[in-house]
Image 1 (cartoon, rainbow, N blue to C red):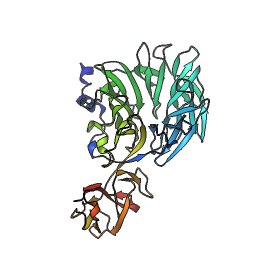
Image 2: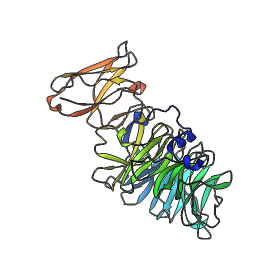
Image 3: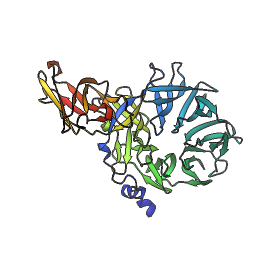
Image 4: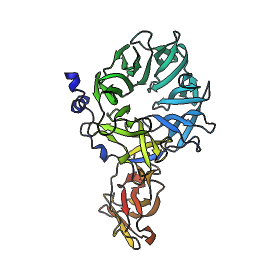
Length: 452
């Protein structure tokens, strides 16, 4: 009876004990940065993991049409190359910028690698023909799967230059380690029979994790609190699942889609993944204790979500930055990569007044530091623009390629205003406005206005 009751959302929220007092996820605002390409002619690329500093790793098409492991920051991309074949992919990255993945001809015919000190290091196998690394922590402990001498595969832990097999749930049956936290707890999956089940390795032992209804299940990520997420079957559907203290909880929200899967969890208990009908009709979600599962698209800056759908959320760090993928409407099979970075407006901006074209309009910003210089900007499209001298994790603008209107100095009451003539051709046009105090990395909320 206890197990059945704890599959219900209220019990899950209580048991997880996460995010007490957190604000509604709908209040979270983001700047959205499209990641640069290795091949501008073929934009297929995927961010697969994210570290604490906002560095991402994954896989991208190259000009030679190979797929290579890559590391991104919001405005740069590094091709990690490949050894033993033409292709590679990076599945994990730690806070030191070390990435892990596979390299070779393909994921089932490659070798696990560690990207360290600007070189790709072959991690070897367990005696078989292949290996692949999926996770790495800040101690450079690496986990994955590798072929063994018997022709099967084992989950492995690599550390201090040595790869060793993790304990088997059922001897001789394949298993894979997907993620490792800073305490050495590892999660993944095993195949004791014909279907996979989620497992955890801890203190030198392997444990089967419970499933929601029936198998298969798989654990894909784990935070430093030992809370894991992944997916499990429930009434014939795949549901996003969380495991806390080796109990399973259903994170799926009915009405958003038939299926879902959780791919990332941070130390605050925020969970990300996808919901819908894979492979081409999915939407990225964010789950918090305060809100449950919610679609990320409504949190995208206006005049951007008209053209884009965010289809997958791959990972989330403690700053709340999210590695996502999305499609342009009308091109459902071409996936683009994005970094979503939360912003925290601290100034209040009014809409242009009187709000009509062909006359002078005034915009006012309040709650500004007295004497601070406020820069007013506008754009026709939402997106993301870094503030010079400010880290993305401090704040960023939610405008794409903004234009400066002008600046003003805040008075003793913390109020700054600017007045400019608006041309008649702006009538009927929707414009986005925002203000910034650059030396404080402070921004206003985004104002969206259609001129009369």
